[in-house]
Amino acid sequence: MGSGITCAGCGIELQTENSSRAGYAPAQALEKETVICRRCFRLKHYNEVQDVHLTDDDFLKILNELSSRDALIVKIVDIFDFSGSWLDGIQRFSGSNDVLLVGNKSDLLPKSVRKSKVVNWMKRQAKEFGLKPAETLLMSAQTGDGVEETAAWIDKLRKGKDVYVVGATNTGKSSFINQLIRRFSDGESPVDITTSNIPGTTLDRIDIPLDETSTLYDTPGIINRHQIAHLLNKEDLKTISPKKEIKQLIHQLNPGQTLYFGGLARMDFVKGNPGSFVVNMSNELPVHRTKLENADQLYEKHAGGMLAPPTGKETAFPAFKKSSWKLPAVKTDLVISGLGWITVHAPGAEVMLHVPEGVQVSMRESIY
Ligand code: GDP
Image (cartoon, rainbow, N blue to C red; front, side):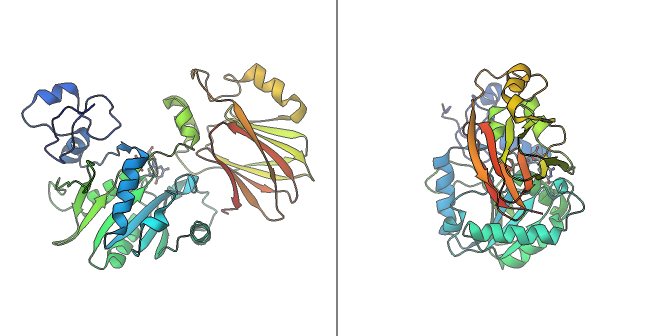
């Protein structure tokens, strides 16, 4: 419910109920003469952009707006959850504008993997999704690696035009913009809160002046409901989100064996010749190997204990849903959105994945 009072920074109607939604301000702040929303507050005082969550409709309005602009679109994806953070429809909504595709969180990739290999893989994936980016880059908004190169490409490709940064929530969009603000600001208050409303919506945006005539716009992110993250409490979410380079766990499996990923997902090797299964997930997530014939029992006995997360505090954790996959001759990734992936090299193998209902699973060309 709106308060009828608007933010003096960005003009959005303020609300006091949901701190992750746009226009949030604490109730006591509304008693002041001039009130700004928490997002503007943090930007003003800490030079820090916070993401707000939008409904799908709101987000579609923003995307629609992009196609009518003459601008460079910087699309951030999470390299750890490429398809889950892709943003369907971006190819249509970008119109005739150039898109700079940036894969973030490169620090999570094993050091032994060549960056150029991952970039080429990103290009092929983008093509499959129907997008031909003007340039494709990898960076880490956390370590700063590749941030300056990305900034240089933005400058080169924008040809004096405005820039829109788009991305699903949790891709690291705010971290990236914060890096830009820190690196490229020269004064004490580098960022003007010159936030303007998008016609037809009541959404706030952060505008960062690039030069006299053009601006970088941060667009709010959209929540991806197919990710496992939305089913978990904060602690469990921490466990499954890798914070540093992923150490791959290699399992040589025979048919009739099962892997449990905590109690969050399970993979049965049903049929085929022995093969290699490499787990690319947070190293804090315990992986248990068992016999397929004992797998159900193990879960009944140990879910929430040895097989955790989830740690069992959720009242409504959805039941597992099965899907079966036949592996091709080449190395292939089985992806569980938000959790990671298993690289399988077992030509012709038949595998069953069990994931909580609603969580997306997919098969793709191996990333490395
Ligand atoms: P936003 O929702 O897209 O604005 O994403 P945030 O900037 O809030 O980041 C989402 C989460 O990803 C946070 O926990 C960040 O610490 C983390 N994160 C952001 N960038 C990186 C990165 O380059 N590497 C890693 N490992 N984590 C990152």
